[in-house]
Every structure is written in structure tokens, then in C-alpha cells.
Amino acid sequence: MIFHFEETQDYSFVRELYRIAKEFLQFLCNRRNVSFTDIRLSNNQGKVGEFNVIEESIEIEMKPLKDGRYIQQKYIAGYEGKILNDIAENNLYLRHLGNSFRDSLIIDAASFVLRTAAFEWEFSKLFSEDKWKSDQRKRLEEEVSKELECLIETSTGKKKKIYKDLKKSVISYISLSQKIHQIFEEYGARILDIFGCYMYKINNISYDHSKIGERIGKQRNNFAHGNLDKEFINESLIDVVFLEQIVLAMQLQYFGIDEIEIQKIINEVFHHNLAL
Image (tube, rainbow, N blue to C red; front, side, top):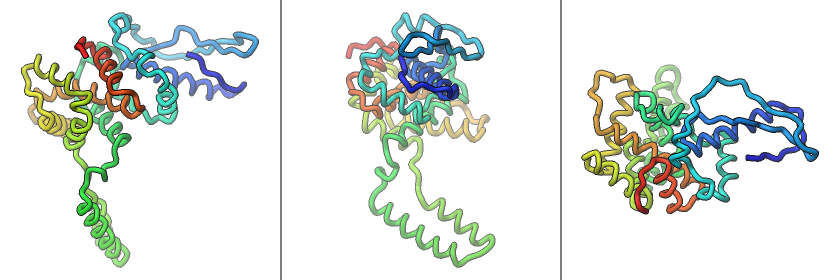
């Protein structure tokens, strides 16, 4: 990987390039424990120095690479600039990635919630929530908001605060389960179903788009609201494993990568080994 830039004494700029390059590799490998063995600083005359970053030692995993569990450059050729730009602007959600391939196999409350957060982040990039509302609903929300605004302007004290809170609640938001259902509507048949049908079949679970969304939404809420006394929804375990693959498909779709290439990437990164 080579970055060309104007001569600079700004080491924070070089440090930022390092972050972008590292997160790009994390995205390609679908895990956090990536590192550079050598970072060279050069000019037109040749090497002028090295860039070293003091970080915690990480576990080096070679098996995922040997198994081909990464995004090959040929699948994203021509889109590297878009991906790097998204990373530079902190617009690509990567916080849900496991610290290592081994860690990514462990599902706990934190990883469950982070995967749903990644999904909602990427959903907001692909779609406007207004797209899923009827014209009548949007018109009524606007009318009620205007009426409440008048009440806010003519009120004081606690009553004014209540009207402000009511105005915030007027705008309806699409639930997580509804968003998951919409993603299946958009990309199920074209990208996701071949993997979902396979995964749920080998786990003896019915592959039902609506139920997947409902289970993930309910279990996420239990975790997020601290309802640890609620019984864990067993099927949501396979749901959130699949959700990680859905998130990657959404990210690739956002960059404009061909749907066939997206399927090839999902097939290899998650080691499905299906005939496409």
C-alpha cells in the first residue's frame, strides 16, 4: 500500500494516514488484529526514514489468511478510493469487528449490541427513514409538529417542557426489526438468501425474514436496557451471526460494488464454500 502526498513536517498527518491504512486492512480482514511489519517514508530520491507506532502487542493470526478469509483486491478494484475516503471521514463502522478471528466467534451482550449498532449505522447511509413512511403519515407528523410548536411558543415553565417532549415523540422512527425486514426486501433474493437459507438449514431453524428481525430487535432491547433477567432468545444467536454478514453486504453495497462480487466476498470471508 502506497500513499503519495506533499512534503510535510506534520507528523499528525502521517499518523492519520497510518490510521486510515490500518482500518482499511481491518475492513478487508474483518478483524482488528492487523499490523504493518514495515512503514517506510520516502521522497523522490528514495527512503528517508521509517514510521514506528508504539502499540500494544497483538496476536498474529495466519490461518484466516491461509484460508482466504479476507476481501480480495480484485473484488473491490476501482472502489478503493471510496472505501479509504469513508474511513478518513470516520463514516465506515468498524467498532463491531472482533479483536481477532477467534474473538469474533464469541457472542456476548456487548458484541450483540455492537453488531446491531453497525447495522443501524449502515442502514442510515443507504436509506432515509422517510422513504418507508406513507405520504399521509409524513403530512400528519408535519401538521402536529406545527401545532405543538405554536403551543411551545405560547407556554412557559413545565408546560413548555412537556410540549417540547411531545414534539420530539411525534416523529415516528422505524424499529430495528422493521429495518432488518426492509434490508431483506431490498437485498434478500439478490444477495443474502443463499447464505441465510444455508445457515439456518444446517442449524435446523426456519429461515423467516420477519422472525429474524423480531428476535434480533427483542434481544437487542433486552441487552441494551439491562433486562438480564429475561431469558435469552436462543435463535437470536444464529441471527446475530448472520447479521454480521448482512452488515458487510450493506457496506459493500454502499460503495457500489457489484452484487455478484458481494456474494463472492461473503462466501469467502465467512467460509461458506457455496457454489455461486
